[in-house]
Length: 277
Length: 277
Image 1: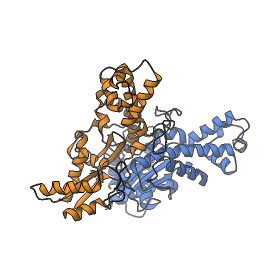
Image 2: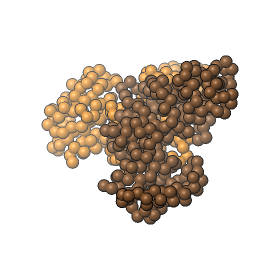
Image 3: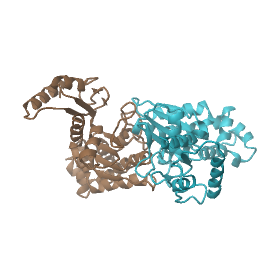
Image 4: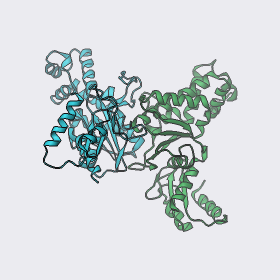
């Protein structure tokens, strides 16, 4: 979607609504310079490079505006309205096409020195693992995001011609049809290969979470993003690996996001509410 | 040292001093329950298990008292009086017989849900690495603390009968004499094997720091403890590995502690000052 169209749609939507507009909060799907309210870029859509989104919306609508990236917004949303309510410290993670993260520390979003805090997706859990687009080997994202689960399943299918019967049926003879969703569907239906792939990816995610627990001892870890919908076996494997990779004195509730895909949107609501005093 | 003797010595020291005692701050070398002011245990000295140190000192001296563990106290000391002054976020690490850590987040010590935050020593950088007393493989401590450097040197000396000439001289024919200090002295004097061991341990420490940078993006990392005195080559190897193990957008100054071994003591001073309002 083109940047101009997004703003035009927003204008139409906001002008049409009956209530008076008092503040705007934005969850942006890419790195944001929070203090300056500017988008750094979108990894998926061109045209957003160094765009001063906060200032543009403020002058467009004449109300105070706040912009944050979707991982921080998701953390804020789950903390204020979802599975993290009442927590003093919280790590929110989104596991989908990538693996992102955001922190609540002492009841507020913690962004770090360059606004880059929460990059758990690029912490390394296996220095001999596969190469990530980030240029390093074995980071959480390259082992545990949705496309990684699909890749791991394809590798297993190729290596084991007799394995993954149900997954093979679901992919309709074409390995390029394999997605994380298809792998979890096959696993739920009893496909052993698919379940092993899913549990393997969950274990690698859990290893990364275990390191985060040792380092920060957060009260809760809230998992969002499409991959988390893979089900109870997946979540249990994440929890087991996380607890197994940290000290026994450290305990954290590791739970699924309550607001599911809307966590970042509720975070945007919380940003706007913060501006309304 | 027996617990009773420590308190008796403290009593004598404080009673003898000319100025009026108004507050007490304590840096304890072991896990502390900060909120309750109690020592959980000392890993090295028996008799401290679940001892209510804050309350004992408060009733002994009749002044407000605060007790924290030495890693948190070191973080506070370096932040208030040392190499971390003016930082909004700071990771302090002590690399000696173990590897400990403490956080300053938004200008105060961050302790985590069970008071265990900062356990960077037990984050895992190589799941196939050697086994640690913590029960896991390849954590930062088992690869990079002082005894780990000595162990790595002894392994290399055994595997390479012709290597480590200078180190062999320094150890006076007995491998059990090898310490991290001896390895750094040999390295400074041109021993290639010793330098490789030191740089290897520095790289593993740096890998752990790199993960901490990705996760928290702190403004500064301050390195204390005896191993850090190994010199410029060692520190440069830590910095290189840390930066190489995180995203290029993330930058942190990684510096040696300014207060050296006294960082935790200055932290205790800061704790007492906090009580004086």
